[in-house]
Amino acid sequence: MEKRTIYLDHAATTAVKPAVFDAMRPYYTEHYGNPSSIYSIARESRKVIETARAQVAKVLGAEQDEIYFTSGGSESDNWAIKGVAFANRKKGNHIITSAIEHHAVLHTCQYLEKEGFSVTYLPVDRYGFVDPQDLEKAITDKTILISIMYANNEIGTIEPVTELGALAKKHKILFHTDAVQAIGNVPIDVKAQNIDLLSLSAHKFYGPKGCGALYIRKGVRIDNLIHGGGQERKRRAGTENIAGIVGLAKAIELATADIGGHNARIAAMRDRLLKGILDTIPNSRLNGHPERRLTGNLNVSFEFIEGESMLLWLDDEGICGSTGSACTSGSLEPSHVMLAIGLSPEVAHGSLRLTLGDANTDEDVDRVLDVLPKVVAKLREMSPLYHKDEKGGGCNV
Ligand SMILES: *Cc1c(COP(=O)(O)O)cnc(C)c1O
Image (cartoon, rainbow, N blue to C red; front, top):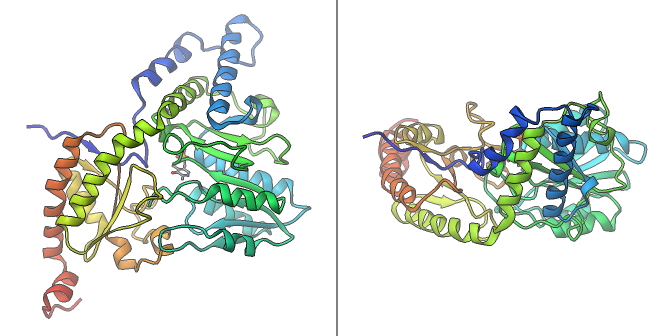
């Protein structure tokens, strides 16, 4: 019997929904006009981009001309941070972010440090929360930007964004949030939450890869990142990815139509999966906060084993999960997020992230609960650490 794939890596990417794909298709084959052209077939391309912009704006509580389409979450993060940093350099050179950001934010900040900016990486508590008091203490008269993610991609922790945004506003500092993981899982209102810039990416909510957006509040001083033609109201050059933009808009509309219903369905599976894992596998623990987390995110550590080996064994059974984040798998460095919440490198290595989404069913949960305890038991049998610590054996490690 052929093994069914059980996809539990929705935080890494998602499949494009059929309705999204159907909406995109005509913009590759029929309405392929370059929106910058004069002739009438280009008019349809121009029009559909503005319709998409309005749809995205509506979902975020923004205005239509505050939405800019990009090539994805990484570009949006780069643009927000570098763009604000360079445009406001005369005011100050200090940026505040957190230790658990996605590499698209962290590596951008590290690059800016080489360019003469100074960056504070706020620590987080054992659940992964940034403390608003820490943020306020870190603010100086040179601070020009605060960038804190909406929800963490590895442990699912939802940051107190509204509170952090209010602090930024009080001190008249621009506030950016990487909301790539949050869209479709948490309702967002950029105005009510004092968000000045927000990054999102279509492929994390059942849209196409290589397409994202950046919300930039009117009045924010920001330099361009991509120079060239006059697209996106002269702020982001490059012929528009029309089909991608249509797909992004359709996907965000579908993903945010019933966030409560979506979360209720996912939560039922998530709760059963978590309880099953903690009940049947000794020396296992949940990472992140039990409640204030993305509904679909489960991150569990198993002592005495290697996450990478676990993934290979699970893959053999058709189960797709991740350890650390997809961007760091392949390297054996423990994830910066796991270390930031205080896990030892050994425990960090034994972490498994399972992220549920639209693709999952109760059967998937049953299957994981059947397979995972056996995989962990087998790997522990092979682990000298386990024998030494648990059984008092005399193995040298
Ligand atoms: C996936 C992800 C990104 C990068 O988005 P891409 O569209 O893949 O470039 C950035 N931030 C977070 C939190 C993510 O999960």
